[in-house]
Amino acid sequence: MAGGFRRGNRQRLPKLEGRGELQSLEREGPFKEWLGMPDLYRYHLVVEGEKYSYQTEDGEVPVTVGDKVVFRYKETKGGNWIDRNSLGKAIDPSEYQ
Image 1 (cartoon, rainbow, N blue to C red):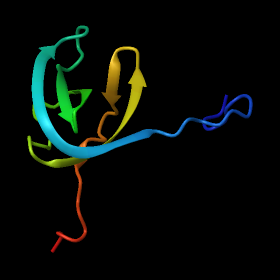
Image 2: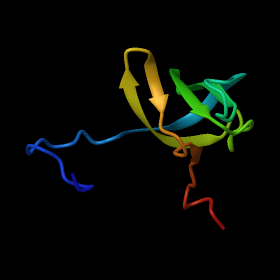
Image 3: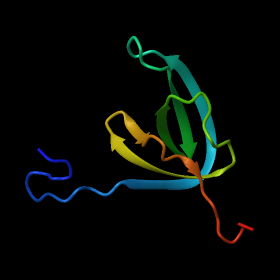
């Protein structure tokens, strides 16, 4: 089936967006899921009192504790998971010069 076409006319749920001050950041890993796969690191973040998990191949994330962050995430049974490559610093236009 060609890409971009979905069966039925269901509306896709919009991605949830989180933003706020990063209060805590912990790293686990590296993990090897299977042979030949790059190492994966799991990060546990607390943003505005909410807990999130983030999994990436990078040993470091582009944010530090105290930064204002923005990201997309999804809610699962295992908690809130941040989408890959969506975590970054929030830029406030009034402070940007």
